[in-house]
Length: 176
Image (cartoon, rainbow, N blue to C red; front, side):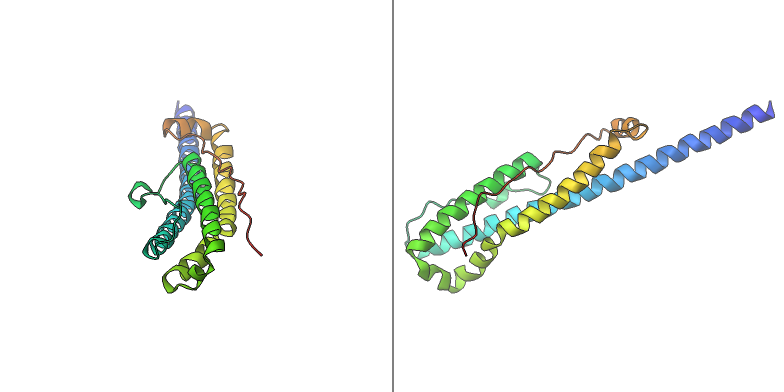
């Protein structure tokens, strides 16, 4: 009888250890993907804000334009990858429209209020691509881990599901 109890205790310890290790790894992978997704959110928010500031300069100078950045109050941290992709596309479109205005009014680049914002906006594509690649790597690691037994059972119990992949290919071309 004692050997049976000892075996059951050992099995219980093994099962508990597996649950703790898997839960810990799921949590770490989930947190990493969320942190990297938040970096994308921040880039989107920051560049949208820069567009808004440049649009205000254009308005002050009474320069006609079609740039309409999103209301910053509507942008949140923790957006889904699909929403992030849509917002990146919108920023890219707005940036293209801004470049058309800047071709007609190059003096805007010399404006003190606009120049710092324009410098940051010019780097949007080169910042969002590596951020999205890092997020995708973390999301793939999370998705791979929770797809295998026993992590799949634990993730299901924790109501964790696969993360969306950030599929965004910029079409905006940097000017030389």
